[in-house]
Length: 272
Image (tube, rainbow, N blue to C red):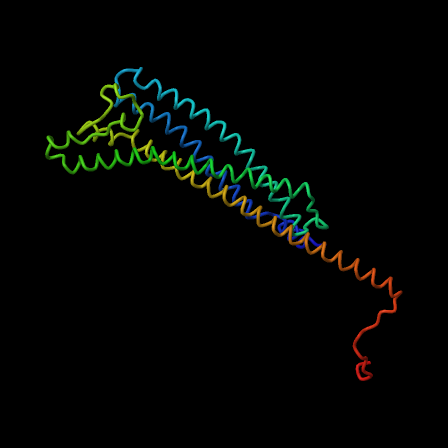
């Protein structure tokens, strides 16, 4: 076997679909965890600076942010290992299906392992759909805040009316109802929207939201790919059983007639 044939044989065993899904999952997890962690830290500073005066008013929010950051650490570690395992499973199924390394090697244990990965991944898809939905909430909050600031800038010539335009963090559950002031109105809110921190947090939450969406797509893509190869395995296994059954039946008939089987068609001399 030449170098070209060897390279083509190796490239034929690469699970490109699983590889793309793994890279997409890695990118999504990196975006969600990295941007989400930094956005939570900056959000705590923003609320502490502009929406409350007493530390006790946002102590619960600070604890929640800290817990979420620990969850992010766990998600990053878990999915780093899980994506590697899924990629290894993709290599196994592709090599078995394409017979890149010899005979067909799909075993009962291998099929059960693939089925287990499919079930676990579908469960993770449901979990990440919930995470994807929850990650839209801060994007919605900052979108409303930016939209209100845009309205304030348009109505800046009438100060009496712009003071009625407010963003109340208490309505979103970020602060308790007894927090003072708990909201930002008028030009104060407009000045907040002009700060670098506001644009940074807004962009970080959008990136985290996009990362969660990428992770959902990758997790949906992986079990579909594994399920497709499962169908290939089942069809191949069914054909092999059918071939063995026909060979056994033919051998039995041949033994019964002791090799006296002949063709049912008339032999023409012109064909000899």
